[in-house]
Image (cartoon, rainbow, N blue to C red; front, side, top):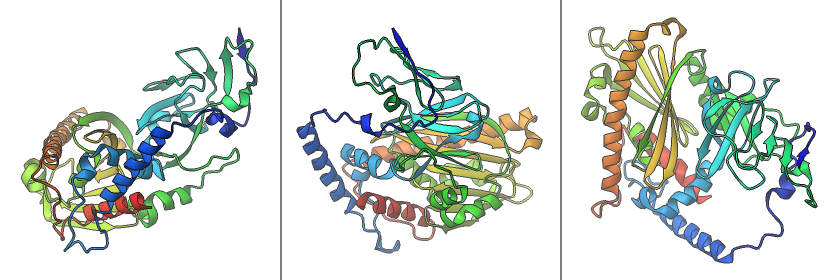
Length: 406
């Protein structure tokens, strides 16, 4: 026998049953967690953000290899503040959805019949099965395990075969919501914000919290301009997520050595880095008319949004790199490509550009995996910064320290 439930307008009445008040704490687990947290905090203090970059040493290798440090930073870095998780083309029409994972958080984002966007933990309230995977279109979410069904507003619509159950309040078993917002073409989630039924999203406030004072700079450089979505490519890399960030943030230091093809189309001496609250922007001029790459154009802008999102705007292209940690020494990088509408039918140009991009990614993967192996060797503990080019990397490490020590 199934229990059919009327949809409810308020989907956020969940707190009282989210954690079972009758559950008995696992004190050994709590003790182990506290011990791991203590050890992780000791590792954090091995880096001093107050030392100027000219004298500073980099974070120790334990930041990039220790399992307890990885678990600690998931909580302090990724489960707090706004995080980019996708783009609006994935939920362009009513009933569109996509799912993903960040650390241990399984999530889904959807657009309902009225065009409203919502996000939820992708976990059935019955016995914790994942509800959906990938992306697509659905008018409701039906659990593949026992058939419990939820509306796109998160409300429990049907609970199967629960005849005889006692003390069951259906309104308390909707999907657990997550704060969601849109900036430009990007979908953002915030795990640490309490959600209220009447919440209104203030775009200016989101821009301020996520991008700080550089939001207008990104707008002026075409980051939120209307572009045509081209494709997605994903890469699993055998390295800590911060290794990939460090590689991105070295001010073009590695480009002439590792990306000779890319370097030939850029004026590397023109590299500049600007530091903002949670964002760093690197820019570089294209090469001469004889060497200039049609794909790169006359200028390239590389914006790093703390902690794990990168926006690359160059020529007619924009691509984004979403970095998802998968463990102490493994991460997933998701590339989404966007193109100015005037070129969306130029198949040859698109294919040539994607081939060039793929070559650069393969070169970076080789670098990052080599760095991870070196970090784990007994020969390495800490390194130094090149002060005139690695300012953005140092800024990234200081932001990490501030999150982890608080």
